[in-house]
Image 1 (tube, rainbow, N blue to C red):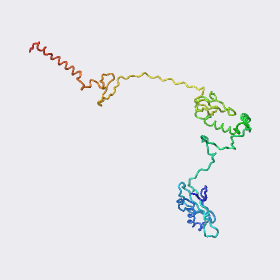
Image 2: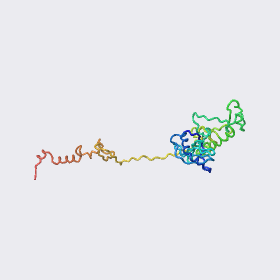
Image 3: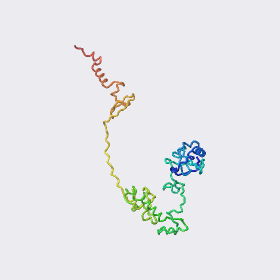
Image 4: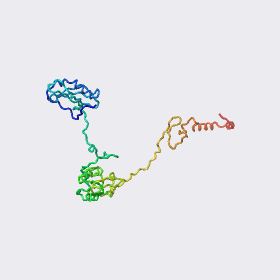
Length: 317
C-alpha cells in the first residue's frame, strides 16, 4: 500500500468544532479517493466523521490489511466558504489506540550491547568518545602521560582518558572480575597472594591484574586484587581418607535356576552331580535304570540262586 501521506502519530481526538453537513455527507467521495491509493480490499466500513476545524473534517474507514489491526484509514475533506462542494485534501493510514506500533527507532551505534560484536563486525567511528583523548593531551596520570608523549606521532592517535579508565575500573570491580562474584566469595584466598597473579601496568596496577593460571576460570582475564578462585597457588585440600571395604562373602547356599533343553526349569545346586544337559541323574528316569532298581535286581538274583545249587542241595519239607 502506498498512501499519500504517512504519519506515525496516533489519530487525533475529536474536537468540538461545529458539524458541517456538506462535509459529513462526503462519505462516497472520501471512499472513492481512498480506494485509488489503498490496496484492493483493504478499505472497510465507514467508522464516522469528526470535525478537525472550521470547514475541515476527517472521515474514518476500517483498515482490513493483514498486520494492521487497530489501524484506520483517514480521509480529510474541506470546503471553501459558502461552497456546497467538498474537496479531498489528503488520505492517511493512522494507528488507533489499540494498534500495535513499531518500537521507537534507536541509532545503530546505540543499539549494540556489550557482547554483540562478532567476527567480521566493525563498530562505527566515534569522534567524540568520552573514554578517549588525543595521545598528546595530558590526562593527569603520570604513566599514561609518559606513554602518550612517547607515542606522539609514532603510535596510537588516542589514549584512554581519566573518565574511560574510571568507567572500566568500576565495570570490572562490580562485575565478575571483582570480589562480589560467587567464585570469589567461596575462594580460599585472594588473588593478591596467588603466584599466578600478574599486576597490570599504569594507574590500574594498584587494583587489577591478569590471571595466568590455566586451571582458573579467570585465566587470561582481568581480576581484582581481592578476587579469588579455587585454583589459588597456595591453596591446599587434604585428600579424603579411603573408606575400608569388607572382604567379599561367598554364598554357597544359593540356588540357580537352569533351563533344560526341553524347556523345563529345575533347581540345581552348585557342586552337585549333574549331567551335561544340566539336570541331575537322579531326576532322569528315562535314560536308564536307577540305582534302586539295579540293587533290587541283584538282590532277587542272589536269593533264587543258580540251578546247579538247587540240584545239589536236598529238598526238605
